Image (cartoon, rainbow, N blue to C red; front, top):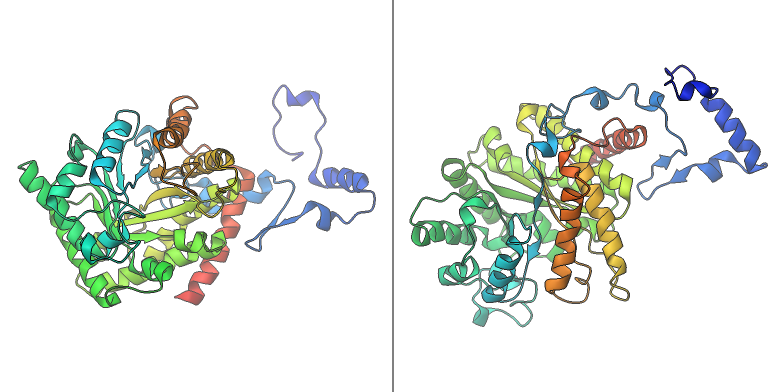
Length: 428
């Protein structure tokens, strides 16, 4: 610290070393052990220091890289959000297509910039409502049974110019077919699908404990979708990997990232076994990462995710520059209270802030009342405006890697990356 060049203002103050600072702190502690009082253990098993300096990041490779260049800790775009602002991708998940359409049209005129549709369990299982069990229809999303339903859902929505985001579950191939049919029949032109229509079979299995098909059949469907997208919709992502089921079950950040990377590796191997080359596979990957309340840890998590993915691909013989992963951020669910739901506004705001500083490509801010009911127009508006205020009033869309070089966050990211890599080696 004493060797750093001083500004004219700082020249008025004497320089101090870290050792002098620690001595002053220990004096104030009056005999209490420094390590016990001043060092903070985390849920992940890391230890946080009370003070970080430039020396902590001096030997960290990713700190000296530029945004837009491997290994992408500082972002996959050289100009950051100046080039591609994150998409305001709030989920729409009412039980009927009419309700979903009304919400979509309303919200798209008020700042929504992506069509993020939640499907109910019956639709994800490929069942008509009369075939489904009680509780599977309309509870967790819209019931979509055919082309006429989709036409109603997308009425007055210019789907050609908006990214589509659908976690389609086991019915992913059928849902993709519906969207293709919609373009060809309703719009009378070839599909211009972009966004993601995908399926995370291992994640679905982890969440529900069962699959309505074999894993091999699920991989077959994803391979068919990806081969079709390669030729017909190169900007459509069909290989979905989610972290919510691990995050909301209590996994720490390191375990969560290791699970995402291990799942992604398995999908690569399965797609290669079905004739897809690595370059094509990478082009169609989409991650959906949960974002919790631990502000700095969540920022670091997103940097680590982008940073480790190219390293994984390099180990597979791929080119790191092809590993520009798309990350959709989704506010945590397990930390939202139903007893004082307005507190959730504070939690979701910090989640949104950390997601943006961490560099998500799109984001859903959890509505403050989602723990007890479907969001209404008011709660949708609050969640949407949380993003819009950060974008248009805080001007976070005018920044390139705003936390780049931050001693604490960069050190934390390096520590997390090392631990994730160790766990990944054990899993894989």
